[in-house]
Image (tube, rainbow, N blue to C red; front, side, top):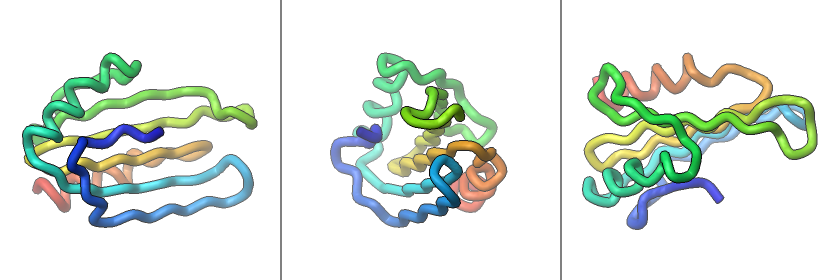
Length: 107
C-alpha cells in the first residue's frame, strides 16, 4: 500500500509504463498540513530515508527489489505545506521529473 496522509485527496495522478518492469507513477495529493507532517514523520518507521530538501520540503526515499523482475523500485515522497507528492519508478530514473514537479509546486 502506498503511503499517504490520512486526509489525502488526489489532485493529479499519471502513470507511464513500458513493458513489464519499466515505469513511472506520479501521484500529487493535498491534505491538511498537520496530516502531511504526521505522515512524513512516520515514513522512517516504514524504512524510508528522509531529509529536508532545498525547497524546505521533507524528501523521503525507499528502494526495494521488484517483486518479479531483477530491477529496483524507488519510491520518493516530497511533503510540505499540505502537499504530498509520491513518485514510484522502476528501471528508470524519475528524479529529474520529480525535481521539475517540486520546483513547479514549491518554487
